Length: 186
Image 1 (tube, one colour):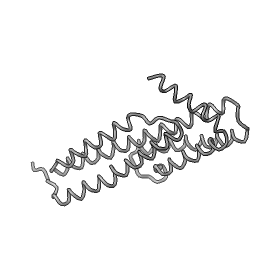
Image 2: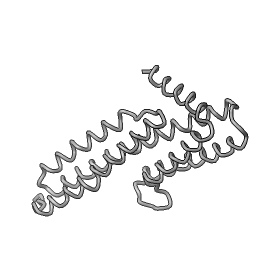
Image 3: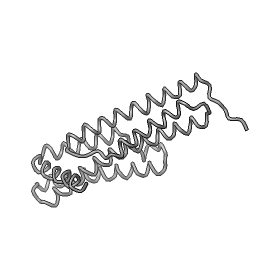
Image 4: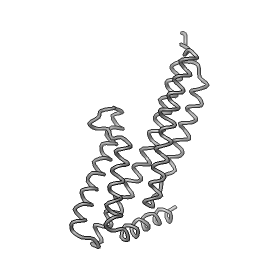
C-alpha cells in the first residue's frame, strides 16, 4: 500500500489557498462580528475563539504533512472549525437582538407600527437562522438554502438600526439587562 505524496509546489499553493481564502477571510469576518457585538452590547461566545484556535492547530498539522489524503483531511478540519467559529458568532448576535426585541414587544413601551416592524425583523432573523442550520446539516452549497455572512451581517445591521433609531433608550435598557444576566450566570 503506497501513500501518495503531494508535490511540494502543489502543497505550497494548496496551503496558501487555505490560509488566504479561509483563515484570513474568517479572521476578518470574526473581527467584524466582534466589532458589531461591541456596538449592540452583546457577547461573542468563547467557542468562536476556541474553534478559530483549533483551525490553526489543524493548519499547522496540514503544513507539516506530506501525504495527500492527510493534507486534505486537515484542510477539511480547518474549514469546519472556521465555519463553527463564524456560525457561533452570528448566532449569538442574532439571539441577542431577538431577545431584546422580544422583551421590547412584551413591555409595551413602543408604538404598534414599530411592533410590526420588529416582528418582521424577528421573522427574517428566524428564517436566516433556519437557513443557516439547514445548510450546516446538509453541508451543501445550495444557494436557495445557504446564507452568507455578509447577508447575516446586513440583516443584523438592519435590525439593530431599526431598534436604535426608534427606541434607543428602551433597546439599551433591555440589551444591558440581557448582557448583565449572562455575566451574572457565569
